[in-house]
Image (tube, rainbow, N blue to C red; front, top):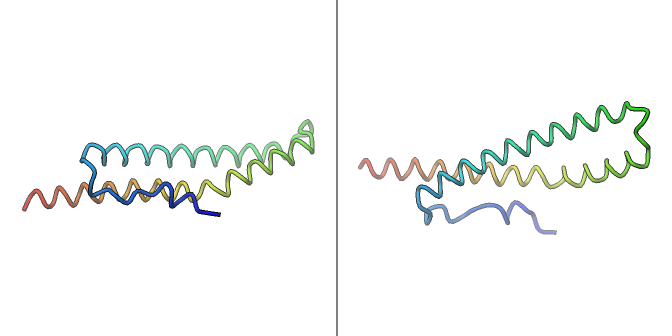
Length: 101
């Protein structure tokens, strides 16, 4: 299986305009924050659902499987988005420094 990280990582930042780099940085940071918030919510939901007497065991197993499948992919997605945001910021700093010279 290929790794989603390699499909999401950007490697052409030097070719992009400054405005596009700012958008990438902003949007990737927002996506990382949103995904991490969702992961925290999933954990909380799973924890509290496990203590509910009204939560059917077969539904719990199905939900747990779906949750596990999601969580298997999310860390690499977060890594790629975080790297994109950091690399875009770095490229902007490099350009700013070069423009001062």
